[in-house]
Image (cartoon, rainbow, N blue to C red; front, top):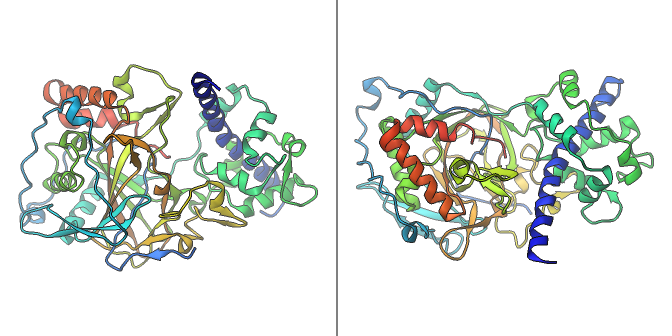
Amino acid sequence: MSQKDSVCSRSYFMVVMVFVHVYILNVMALLLYVYYTSGGAQGQGAHSPPDSGALPAAGGQSASPPQGQLLLPPSSSSSLPPPPPDPAPKLQDDAVLGRLHRLEGIKVGHMQKVDLEPNKVHYVKTLSLKPLLFEIANFLSEEECKLVIHLAKLKGLQESQIMPSDLQQEAIDEMDISKEEIFNLLDYNQDGQLQMKEVLTHTRFGDGVWITPENIRDIYTGLKADPDGNGLLSLEEFKQLNTNAFQTYLRQRGVQKTELVRNSKHTWLYQGEGAHQILRTLRHRVIRLTQLPPEIVEHSEPLQVVKYDQGGHYHAHHDSGPIYAETSCFHTKLVANGSTPFETSCRYVTVLFYLNTVSGGGETAFPVADNRTYDELSLIQNDMDLRDTRRNCNRANLLVKPVQGTALFWYNYLSDGEGWVGEQDEYSLHGGCVVARGTKWIANNWINIDPDVQRQIQFQQAISKYTNEEAPAEWAVDNIYQDLHVEL
């Protein structure tokens, strides 16, 4: 097969898979709807030390960053040290921008000293090599944590999980693809039958409703979709399923928060020039930790603050998506002057901060950290779905406990071998375990970098023009990232 044919084939495959993800959820939902309305029934992991921190998740309902600076009473911040001076917004040339600093993990448990602020010693501890994941104790002080929470409350939080849109059904109706083609794509091992794990593997890319093995069994039983009861769907059985009524199903049955992919509230806090000194100090500290170009960090997403109440969770996911020739980054799409069928948030780095110590639960699970191999289907074994953080957090390879002031830092992409962004690191799969007692507050910074160096340079030039000549920095950041905060 020629390279051109390979690229075209991969492009077609990605288009089809996006449809398939939505299609399967619509099929499952329809079956549940009909069944319910007709009277039917509805390796042990390594744990980090007690002083470690953990991670929340990305995405959620689109939320515009703050429109004005939030002010605290003078007594709240008068005892805090002044933030360091702003780094000069100097645009680096191609030769310099083309190589990104990347911390070395060395080995799990390795400790390295870092200089983050005057007269204070911090150590970076390696938690895993796949993904390259680090922990920094006491990254924030107790007072800083409390002030970030206070700022988030003043801004106002909103529900992170959104309900499905009618646009999804419209997209399905416009797609021209046969059920045979869909069946063949789902039939991972090409044995002519759909196993439960093959169906479940694709349901996590849908609209936010988490499908379990029990759901699928109820569906099959209620509609007699699996007459022989072997838990498998043949092509003929699959053809009998319809693609409509997902919205009707949700309205009739309703969805509990525990059934969503994510159960939390969040908001966004602007960190650029003119922001509260705590937010500016935190951003400077992240620049020193990652040692990435200041202008890239400064022009990345605002700070996301997330609150998980008791029962809150986030099933395992990736913070950013894979990059193909047919994929563009949200943050650079406006300056790239090109059109691609797929977009993703290119979050090269995640830095997560624990703002409080959780009374019970709320750990961050990395299900496949330092596994020898990664395979989507292997995440589901019989009725055990390793991505399910409400049930199987204790089976993750790595669990990190939430401790106030601790930060986690990891790379969502590998290196391309030349110092720039490479392929997605699939081992960065992670999720938030159920908060059993109390409340969990976290915040995270995502550093956005386009794998295409030239597109990133164009973006840096464009945003520098906004912030230096045409508009206030906060306005520019708000508008550039207002559509970026999406579920992945």
